[in-house]
Length: 602
Image 1 (cartoon, rainbow, N blue to C red):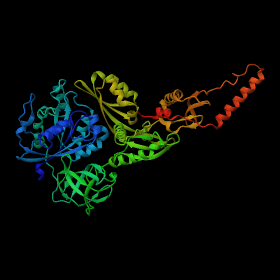
Image 2 (image 1 turned 90 degrees about the vertical axis):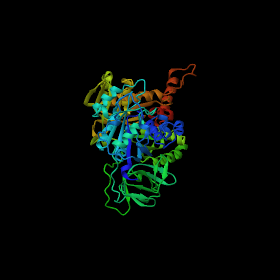
Image 3 (image 1 turned 120 degrees about the vertical axis):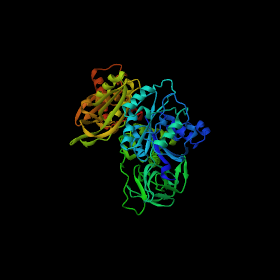
Image 4 (image 1 turned 60 degrees about the horizontal axis):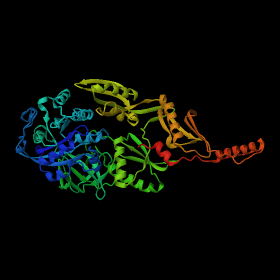
């Protein structure tokens, strides 16, 4: 198809503002999916069962739609002013059938890099805002990314038919972000009200792609999945030229070479077409057996064109949260290893290595993009492989050592909260070592910005903010840099035996509190034994806290009915020597249940 009849766009929004429901209406209006199918399965593009269960998009989904312009379906009535008659910033449009390539993006901040590469594959976006919730943190974050990419942005307010909708207030919030009220669309993705008008605006306002049709093939990889039989399937936006089946291709970053086994587009299922041309979005079956060789943001091109210019913006997503993952019984170790291996084939952002604990045995150290990413992995292990391993407490990756000092990752945190909750939110952020950098009032909402250690997410930042704001606070973050941190390594010992899985880093000024908390919990959960258990928390050679669990003691004098004091003293001395010998040769035994209670992240 000629590029002037192609529109590539995405929908961006905060979590749960209606992206997937709006996608359903687009599929219905364009006839891509029959209405009966959509009625059977709402949020059709969310094929992932975990995504559907949680009600959030965790995996982007592209789809190609064909739509006749102008359409007779755009004559909807609207109780608000609609800008479909406003020709400002509109393009000269011919009456024809248009190819609309939509990408439904994830809304959670853990997948912000994937969202940025998705937007790089488009010329425009629909910015969707919930009329009942208004502009929230990730709304602004995605908007900044879209503007950075230079995309045309079409603002739309969703759920205008909801009883709690406060549309006029949301209009003012959008105006504060630089939009003009006459450019805003008012829709209900659930009922379809004004959705055809919005789709028509996509054709009118978003420019067509401008790839060089006569140039050598070059495409941006904005996502990839692993097929057990055909290898890696790369989701691509063709930048220049064209590609046909069996074309020899190469990946720029990894230098991997392969052949295009199959080429096609999404409906949203894969449809083989044998060719993709400049400006189009589709897939390439590469046959590559390791998804880590086909990275999001990489450039794929025809072999033999070594001087190709890669698409800018490529980076490798770095894991930020690390968990130890151990089987609850040694019988599950092989099954767990196979499951992790299979999930790493379909998730290139997953990193793992084997590790060993003296008390938990063999396991794995796994790095994730964030806590949601880790939670999804845990859920997939349970649902797809029927495994429920132990996840230890999470930690972030620090740089440095005790001699050179430590550096910890920092983030720039943005919080949107109703002004009546500002006091509680500021208190939480101060306790979490946040430094305020900006505060702005917008109507009834306050925007707070903080620089804060990323580790605060692992210390309950999200739940604390939701608690003090009655669930109304929304937040977004961007990783910034590494900054010096005063940290110490807390080591737990029981009878001078180090317990490796209970060691952790703590801030120097919090170390004593954390140490007392850990030894106190161990005293409460460890069972008494025949020998005394001395629980100590060390920083280097210094003991920060100490607790004892007394041993069981047999009353050796119970059977004595008489006798002088020397007989009793001999029995007590013999018992004392026996206890001392037992302490010197006994091994520390910690029941797995106690360890699970101390290290489990659940």
